[in-house]
Structures are given as structure tokens and as C-alpha cells.
Amino acid sequence: ISSKKIEHDNYLDVGCGYGVNSSIFGRDFKDVVCLDLSAKNLEECRRRISSKSNKNLSLVRGDAQSLPFKRESFDLVSAFSLIEHVPDKREMLKELLRVLKEDGELVLQFPNKYFFMELHTGLPAYFLIPSFIKPWFLRKIGYEGLLEINIPTIREIKKLIEDLGVSGEIKKTKVIYPIETIPHGLRWIYTILKRLKVLNLVPLGWMVCIKKSKEQKGTA
Image (cartoon, rainbow, N blue to C red; front, side, top):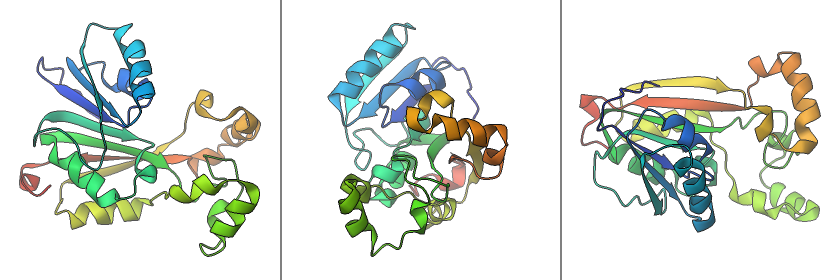
């Protein structure tokens, strides 16, 4: 990801949560906008970022599927660990690309659907369970909320972007999360997998960067 460090550059973090990623990615931007559905998350985000900088920080409560911003408003747009929670992934991507400026960058991060365990719950080999069994199985073990999470694959994301008429540069990167982001009960196995370098072959997640080119203008 390139930060141009121009005075008027601005950055939008969609699904900002507590502002962890906003504070890191927004370092080189004068204007930072954090959007989330949760008012509690936004307040925590305000405390985290305002205490560290004098940036022009805007907090917006909103939905990733219907962003309250004008077309081509931001130089950098990010969405971390969000798209798997959104019902209409195509509409979300369409909105993120709509508010992105020409030559801007969109950064998506999401878990690896085929990792050894389901990263929200720690369930082993969850991806191997047939779809028609999952509702019964999750009700039995008390994880019905997992039915609302639908982790996309890299191929599915690329197909959605292509369907939106985007033909620009798309890059993917393996993501190995800091141990602080791993649930305490899973840190022991995470540490073992990391030491054995298994995570280099089967990453916990993916980061996809989309560069919006001139040819894409007006297609999003």
C-alpha cells in the first residue's frame, strides 16, 4: 500500500471497530474517517486515535452497503475483517469502489476460509462440514451466530470485482495476525503453527489490494 503523504489525502476505514487499523493505516493522512455500525466502537475509536494525533478525525455511524459519501471522496479505503459479516458483498464492494478516488487504493482483509479452524470460534476443520448440516450442528453446540458469517474466497472476491467492471490491478497477500489478536485459548496452537512455519503455507487470512485506475472511473 502506498501513502502519498500529500496534505489533502484522506482515508476511510469501513467497519473500523476500535480503531486499531485506522490508527495504523491513517498515520500518513491528514483526514481520517472511521465508519462503523456500533456507536460503542466509534467512541473507543475516538479515544484511541485522538489521544495519539492531531488529525482531522470524523466518526460516522453507517452501513458498508450504503456509504453516506460522495463518489470519489477518498484516496485510501480499507475494510478489515468485515466483508464476511456483510449480507450483500457485491453491494459493499460496489460502494467501497464508488467512494474511492481515481488512482486510489482499496484494501480488504478477511480470514482464510480453508484454515485448520474457524477463526471466530476455534472450531476445528469447520469448512469440511456440509452446508446442509451446519444449521443443526451449530444449534447443537450453541454457535448459531456463526450462520451469519460467510467467509469469501480470493476467487469469489476477484469474481465480484470483475462483475463490477473493474479491470485494474489486484494484488493478494498472505496475512499472519499478531498473537494479540488471537483468542487466549488458541494461542498455544497458534504459536506452534507459527514456529513450524505452517502459517507460511496456510495463512490465517488474506489481504487484497485493488488499485483504481482511469479505466475504472465511473464503473463502480
